[in-house]
Image 1 (cartoon, helix red, strand yellow):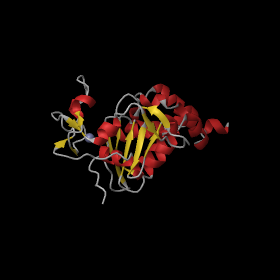
Image 2: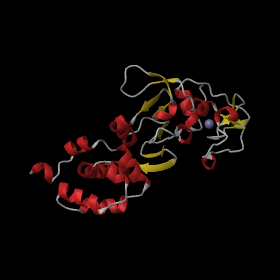
Image 3: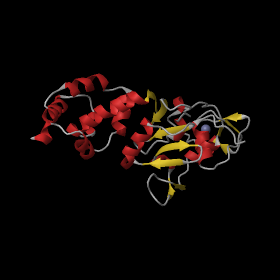
Image 4: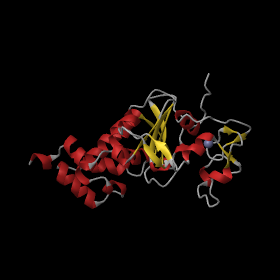
Length: 243
Ligand SMILES: [Zn+2]
């Protein structure tokens, strides 16, 4: 009987075929039970700036999954690519993790990540999303045991949502992106955005909806998962397109 994963990092280890190395200690990052195979001194920088987010900042050890997630020269299967990428860093990617595989995705795979976040795989699974490629995202992630409510992390933000809510939010953000592009939605709603919405849609109700949504974690997630402007324009044709 294989061991049951208790943290997202442990699921990541299992998916990557790494032995869990459980023991009497708890992992500095994710809090999983671990032995002394991976000393924190080798995996945590002295200048670590995210101590307030880790589970056990006093621990001297990390678990096998968190150690694996810090690999800098490893083989990574990327969604839709025939050959895995070699000698690359775990942290450069977003991850969709199930018991038998961990698949990496880049910003070019927003459509796939969107479909996974709205229609997740069979549990147990975990989803860790990287926006910057600078931060390690795997050790913050949670194991999900149901498919209608999902907890994932977008960088350091832990977000729990109902899939129906996310589906609706993404539809709105993609309709907005068709009018304005993605970057504009990262800033607070503005007159410039309102004008772009009016020019594209011939009315402003979407702008009013966005004023209610902006700043909420689910909205940030919806923008992250939205497809490119050209794709959104094709999918959601405004009055501009019908002129
Ligand atoms: Zn860990």
